[in-house]
Amino acid sequence: GVGHTGGCAGAGGGGGRHMKCVKATREKLESAAKNSQAYPRLPSIAEAALYCPVAKAQRRKDAVGSQIWFNVFTLVNIVASSVLLGCEMDQNTGSIVQERLGFFLADFYFVAFFLTELGLRFTQFGWDYFLDTWNILDFLLVVVNLTDFSAALDPASDGGYRLASTFRMCRLLRIARHIEGVRLFQGAWLLVQGLVESMRSIFWTGIFICVVLYGFGVVTSTVVGQEAAIFERWPDADIYIGSVLRCILTIFQIMTFDSWASVVCRPLFDAGFLFAVLVFVLTIVICSFGILNMVIALMVERLSAMKEAASIKTGKYLNRIDTELMAALAEDFEKSDEDNSGELDNDEFLRLVAMPEVAFKLKLLGLKAEETAGLFKLLDADDSGSICFKEFFDGLMKLKGEAKAIDLMHLVTVCKRQELRAVHNLRKVRRIATRVDELQGRLDSLGKKISSETRSRHRAAVRNKQVWHDAEERIKVIGKMATDLRTYFPTLEETEHKELLDEIEKINDLTGDDEGGDGEYWM
Image (cartoon, rainbow, N blue to C red; front, top):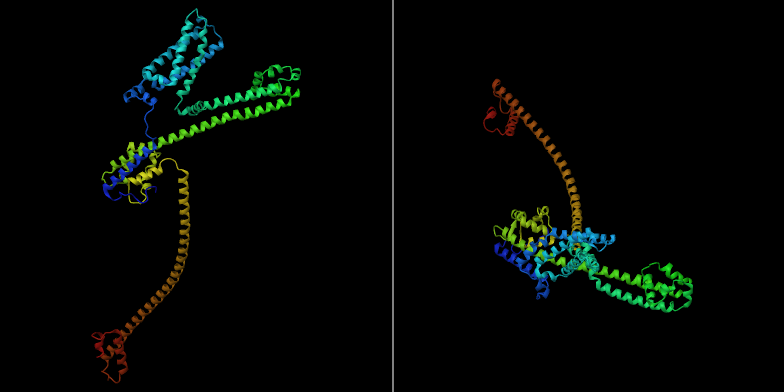
């Protein structure tokens, strides 16, 4: 069982001990919940500015801007506007409205939609709308798009504002905001967040690359760009190494592997400038294999740190939720104790887990409905037929979630001990079986002797019975002979028939008939 092995303090102690047990456990849960939170602090300025009453928050939640269908429709319009802008630029339409009437009507629709969206969200959040950076960016894009659309209506306009329409592509960044928290786009949001978090590292890496490019550009211009012979042997030398800036661009081309061997290195090698080729190879090793891979490593490291931080944050949140669930289950346990005994029997426990709210709480803890049927036997470790709250609490804390490595190791250890105990008991059983076989053999031998003795006694009894039967027949014959002598012959003298009388007296003694019967014939 997974319950408390030693029982609980309230077992058999009545409702008073049970209340103390529940109270102590509840205090323990509340203390754990307080410890799981951060140290108490004053709210920041942003938190104070974003604070709103419950009623106001409910109105914001029920507004149109918070509905899923409205946000999805907004994303569709953002993508359609960007695609339409690309098609318009690809067809190279003019700046006159009559030449781009279809695109003009589409722009009118998108301007009207995004202006309506801006009004709805401003109505929803009020001036708090401008506390979000994304909202400020969207507001500026709407203003620029509206200005561009107004300029297109002016016939005297030369289309100078058409360049501002390209800023509408920045609205695509709002897609990253809307995919936050969506499980389907969790990987994409992690990449976007990692890129944003790595911008500082990427910025300083870019600065370092610029310094390296400048250094190698100066070295290349000094070693190769000052040689007049190379300009005679290589016609394109002035394009690639004619100045320091051109040398920097050449180094950047080599760093990106853009035809660096056939266009730059091979002509220098044929011209005899092997040292310049070594400089270019060193540039590839440092910039391409070193710095650019360092950027990737920084991004991967940042993504791993963000994922670990998100896991820790999620774990703390789940622990707090588990603590609140256990506190709620403590109240349900107390309500289900109908007899106030401090314990629940099997029937009370089944009624407890059958309650919809308790079943939902157990499901949140990772226990399925079909697993609760045999849960009572697991929690009742002492086989008392009832469980107290401590057994219930400790058992649920051990059963919730997936099995950890230490739990599996403990299970393997217990199984190993049980296996050794079973082997030891098996050896004992074998020794006992051997002794039982010996006793069985002895009992079989004794049974044979008893059977032989029984048969012998049976035969003796049969013979004894036959002897007694023969003796009775003989007595009858002798008695008949005596009767005949007394009846048909004169009485003989005792001395003449002494032997016969002695024999009759012996027969009378054997039969025990001392009184009456045939003894009267011998008197």
